Image (cartoon, rainbow over all chains, first blue to last red; front, side, top):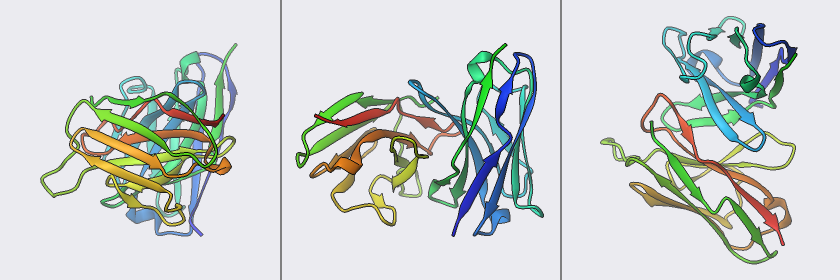
Length: 118
Length: 113
């Protein structure tokens, strides 16, 4: 069974840092692009970042560029999102999402909640 | 960036009746490879989003055939032929043609009257 399990969310003060992880199983992780997408209740879904299968190419939403870093360890089947200089507006549920070659985002994890507040 | 505009944003429906959600794109989502990169996702209360359709009308495994996706270019529609209680949730369209960024519509909340 294809599965994505996020972890690492929590409460952090403005200006703080947090690292999210996403453990993948049930598929050949190293052959898929991956994304982070966040959900703010009442505001909808927003794409945050993507990484290609080798980890050699990444992209970011303008609102997180320079503060967030996406990475992956294909030997450990794990995706990461390092978040720094966190702001209240980064408060959201963060989802790890698989990107099926040619067909786009398909499988979503259960999400991990990040709350930025003093 | 491509802007996706969904309507309506709230859709109260009677059980057994049809429902329709529109998604309009600020740019054409058709590609020179012949594909159109527009997906639909469903998010039920308390659950993660689930993909229903990719490339406009290709149904994902397990999606009931009362759901259908259609459209081309900049105009797309998700239809439910007969709404059931389990269809309650928020529906999002998403484009994967002009990236980055990948962009989503604002979401349409389907509820039972």
